[in-house]
Amino acid sequence: MSSDPWGRVDETGTVYVRTADGEQVVGSWQAGSPEEALAYFERKYEGLVVEIGLLEKRVKTTDLSAKDAQAAIDHIREQVDAHHVVGDLDALRVRLDKLVELVEARREERKAQRAKQSDEARHAKEALVAEAEELSQSDQWRAAGERLRALVDTWKGLPRLDRKSDDELWHRFSHARSAFSKRRKQHFAQLDAQREEARKTKERLVSEAEALSNSTDWGVTAARYRELMSEWKAAGRAQREHEDDLWNRFRGAQDVFFAARSSVFAERDAEQSENLKLKEELAEEAEKLLPITDLKAARAAFRNVNERWEAIGHVPRDSRPKVEGRMHAVERAIQEAEEAEWRRTNPEARARAEGLTGQLQAAVDKLRGQIEQARAQGNNAKADKLQRELDGRQALLDQALKGLQEFGG
Image: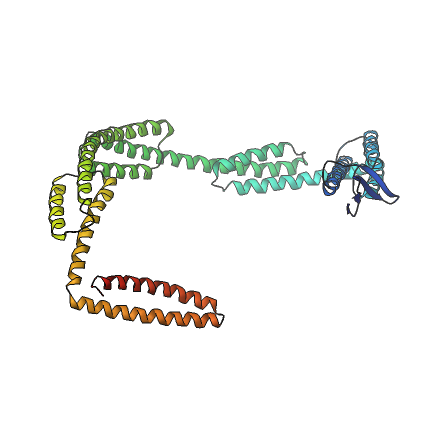
């Protein structure tokens, strides 16, 4: 069961509203939760509140007849008495009773209302004048212009004041509109001059772009076209009737150049694709030297492959790292084999390797002891930090031991 201050829903889904005369059945609800039922009937109550509010406003501010007003009150009262909503129904009845009193006092209120409307009209027109005078200094030409036109429509919808007051306010209102129109005219005259200057600048840029369209100095010309584009953007917009035509000419000149460049580059790409195929074959030949068993033979064979590699031209830029990486991998393997051979025959290197291994082993043993101590003290954060350091030292130790094995140690 669910409830709030004005209603409740029992276990069968029956909704009740609380009134001064006790609980009344509102209706039955089976479509959802009790909370949804209360929310639904509370919304219906809010609808009555709004309806009464609108009727109160009509009674106070319009020429609604007493007969029509009473009929509207009776209609709402029937809905309140039917208690098909959840809310403070007694409060609604009080408001309806007061509305009846208001309807009966309408004639006396009308006179005061007319005086009030006149005063409101004066304040409204003074506010329109103040806003118009503020807008007269605005640089938001479209928005301010539209707002001033809206203010004129608002003015026309307001009642007239006494002739002297109305004329004085209208004179100020009209003067503000005229001042704004004068400033706007000056602004657009200046803007027209700027657009004419932009047109002249873009005519010059178009002429240069068209002159460059047949150039075959690909790099320099492409760079110049990028500069021309930056200058184009910086020039601002020309008049609408010229802007599109100038842009089409400018873009068309660039298209001619870049189409020609693309054609040349396409031929170059075809040649480089063939070079790539040859280099991939050489990379495969070099990779067959691995693993290295005969260092001297592998070194000679790689030198032969590399000489043929250098004789081949460029390959596509995006393919270069991969194919060159394959050759470099073989070259590194040969270099590592040479270094390993040198280390096997170098007593000083063996001594250094043994010293390093001893130092790392001591550091690893020390860290293990510190970790055990930290765990015993319950300081897991310190232990985890030391463990990460131990992992790094252990990796170095493993590498050093592997190197030492190359000396047969």
